Amino acid sequence: MVIAGYHHPQGPTPTMFDWIADPQAWASLATLTALEIVLGIDNIIFISIMASRLPKEQQARARQVGLGLALFMRLALLASIAWIVTLTQPLFSLGDYDVSMRDLILLLGGLFLLYKGTNEIHHTMEGQDEAVGTGRQTLTFGSVIVQILILDIVFSLDSVITAVGMANELPVMMLAVIIAVAVMLFAAGPTSRFVQEHPTVKMLALSFLILVGVALVADGLHFHIPKGYLYFAIAFSVGVEALNLAAARRRRRQGQVGHHVPGA
Image (cartoon, rainbow, N blue to C red; front, side, top):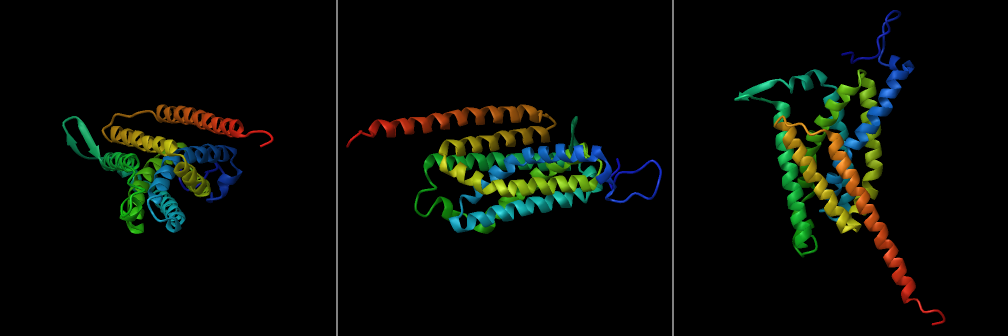
């Protein structure tokens, strides 16, 4: 695998900027950037939900710090590709099951995501976010950042492995990650507000986190679930919820028109 840059068959010594003249590298950049954005959706959802448990004046900062850590983790892992490769090497075996460091990270990350998703659903259903002295006040800024960092490690590992599998150029992979995180940073605020303003959307988002957690646990146990199935299920659910929200807005408009009495 070529990492440092595009190698010409003949000519001067290649540099890290030679990929700029390679149309295939640009195609890889566009494809990988789009995929990184899609893979970052669950990261945005988790960060937005965790940040919402903080006082309003700290939420934007928590989102920015969380995405900044995500960018740092991804770039650091990309710079350590040789070490990333060793994560797939078996550490020990349990019968026919070879356990690698990647398996352990995915397994523990998936279990953590299942716990957090279930816990947040419990808070939402029990109305603890609105209770005095509970919900938002029970979490500190530091504890939220630590939880975001834990999931950033898991999501970053998955993202980097995908990047390494799709592109041969390290600059292309790093640029794709930077662009994707920039888009996530821009979308984090509106996404967080939208999720918080619509309780059904928040519940759907938490269900997505549980779904991703199940997929991570399965992957850690060598039961690979194609991501296309997961994202199709998420896209279908989002489509249904969008229709529900549109229907609710239409009913509200009709109700307002029905209550208006001409000439009153």
